[in-house]
Amino acid sequence: TVSARKSGQHNWIHGLPFKMRFPRSRLYISAIPPLAIGVLVGLLAAFLGVGGGFIMVPAMIYILRMPTNVVVGTSIFQIIFVTAVVTLLQATLNHTLDILLAFLLIIGGVIGGQFGVRAGQKLRGEQLRALLALMVLGVAVRILIDLVARPADLYSIIPATGG
Image (cartoon, rainbow, N blue to C red; front, side):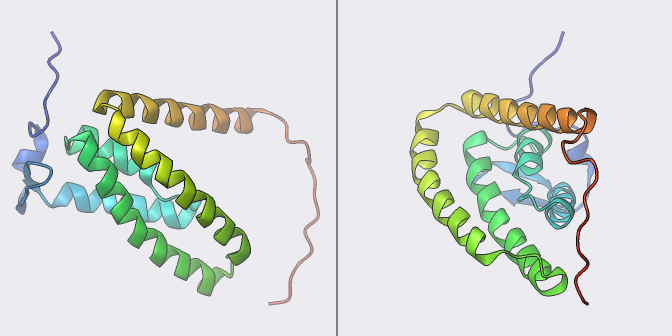
């Protein structure tokens, strides 16, 4: 039989050193797994330009066993700092920041965030996890299609910029 573990119950995490108490999440675990997850998210943010929420949220729910309602706020809070640092590095080292487009996306995100917070208050943890699973599945299907489908523009010439 398969038994579902509840928040606060862990397996291998309890054997790791450097334990800390996380009162809001009701966890007493090693600091190593959250740091490792953070490193992975930082790498993804730098390589792929993603905030890392699609990795961070499932990791906090299923590896760290955090309550879903605490995961949402914690994930968003850490993303602020990770993306700020990666944005500065991308802008200064790679010169890959379109500031006008970024501001329009920020405005849209702030508006959408207002509705999302209110909707999130009305949903149970199971519903939030189901929505996350659907979004991750949708992204995975899209990536798979892009890998298999023949691109519309098979050959393109990109002018070199003087460096």
